[in-house]
Length: 291
Image (tube, rainbow, N blue to C red; front, side):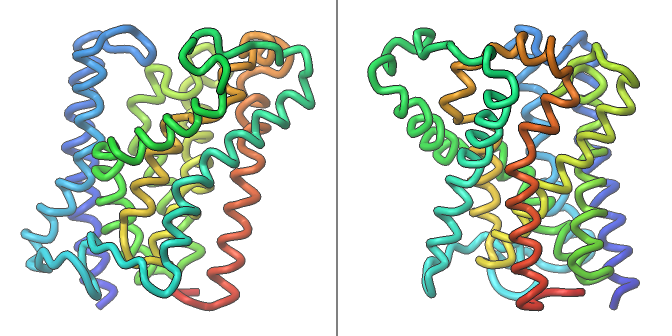
């Protein structure tokens, strides 16, 4: 059974990386660089986020695993809010805001002079800045189509296979590394870390893999607890939306001047790491899946 799972997983990864990287490298060859103002190219790159789900569909057709939406060995597209599973959905939606906000609190505590901005760049929220986060979270959930593309593949197919093959804990690490490497072409053109740092781009790829391990453990947790990819999809979308109020009130240049990009990144991720450790302890304590 494991040999079959390994074979099917290899097929999936070949399709997912192959189709996505064709898009990513096509955009790079067309001159796209991360952060550059090019709406068409950004949309083209966003198309790459749909490829893991499409690879999932193709893999199931090639391997004859079927396209069942719910149940054992399914695509996990069902939504079940019974037995208090709705709590996991709320957790998935709001936990990215919480750990991002707490990460910014840590940055302010370490570099107090970085704080002092306002929400003036969003005048409609000037008197009610808390609406920045509410609107950001709500819009991310509603427009989580691209995140579904990733989660429909990574949590919908890759992680269940990895867990069967090697158990939960190893699967979290290996799955995070795979997911991080999938981002490598974008990391090489400035995604997340820019291009002006020691060890570019290899250090950036390494850090991306670490980040994917941390956040991947939480995404796997909400998927396992609900047997659905929707909580992970919502969480992924909110995480990418950067809904923190304090984001709008921090002077990033001051932080970068004092800490550098790596310290900035590591400090901001401390709360996420704590959440990741907690959810892994919960899963292992209850011995729900794998070893």
